Length: 220
Figure 1 (cartoon, rainbow, N blue to C red):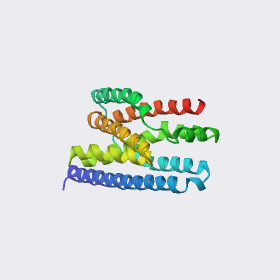
Figure 2: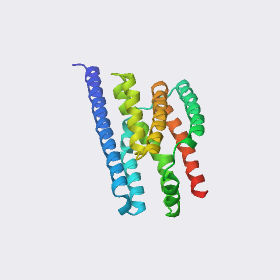
Figure 3: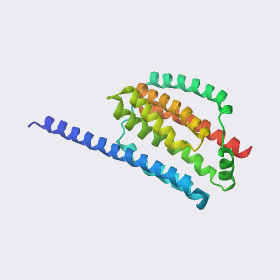
Figure 4: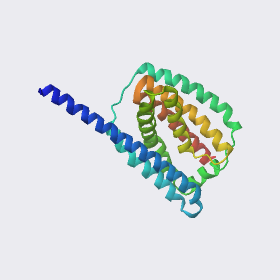
């Protein structure tokens, strides 16, 4: 067997091993988010406010390890296409947000602010969550499914992302999750057309805008 064949075989085995590691991490991440949502719903009244904040940050930071097995791909055209749909979605969001019940969101944000925990959440939303979400929901889940069924890949990756991260408890939460799932579809489209870097840039822009909104609510 020639050296080139051995090298190619070794590279293929390594690629398969990396793919399996990412699959296992993705499953672990989904389970961790589901457990976090259950804890937040059931035990929140009995836990100190900082407990859930720290737990969320730990979960997000722990799963950053999968980033080393990603090969970022970037297309400027794909980024621009994704940004076009993101701008349309964001403009529509500004019009319909007043129609979606906010529930306890405002009081929760103010509580985080008074407890001194808001800066930690801002760091998580700005620097960690976009990377981890794009890594597992787009680069793993969407990427694995798109070869089998493109519509299923879009729906599964966007719905899993929106429902696990928003954890809706009422009609207002359900409406928010569905609106966010549309953003998930746009992020998947940006990933498909422009690669991991494109979807990450758009997600980071959204996170920055969301963070500004958090600060406005907290100080309002």
